[in-house]
Image (cartoon, rainbow, N blue to C red; front, side):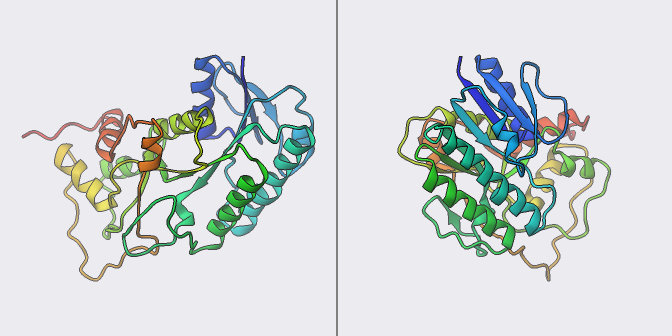
Length: 286
């Protein structure tokens, strides 16, 4: 029975744990706080910023997923997780001769700083526009240089089923007066977890992948589509003086899909249809 260590059992980590337990793996879930983990997960309480949280893991580990969420959005919170915490994990892997185990590091498409709406892929320039994304990029480089069997997955924004604020706000009639028209890259939670699972067991030369759905779409596009298909208020008219957000790009998932992965939620339409039904929204009568 393969053993998987998931470092960080928040929404994504718990979803990966559930998939792998169902597949027959032994799953160790390292988390900072006691929480309800998927049935069958072996709970490990620990703080990644403290080396002893890894030193206490005695059993063999075949695969590791690092998907710890920082406690805040400031640089210090990111450094505590992706500098100090990651260093503690890498030191442990080296000290225990686990350096060649498959380590999957979950990063973010925020490492791309493009602002003109262009398509980006794994070969595109990474020029982070904020300090937290720079911390992530540095963490990626360390993982890839230290662990020869590591893979980095740059995930787009995760949504559904618990991350559904856009649908809830729309249902409550709380659409903002100004809606972003910049491209938003997103991926449904289940597809994010499936991508992690896929890359954990993929025999491939590529070590860097983008995780996103097939169709980047603005918040306005999503809300307009929802209002056309469900009983929701119409979307306010576009503000002629509105400007795009600093990060305005489209992330291409071609390399991930060519590796044999397929999306269950290829666009926002499939994902938000499910969220709309779960929220009790009624289909708009034609």
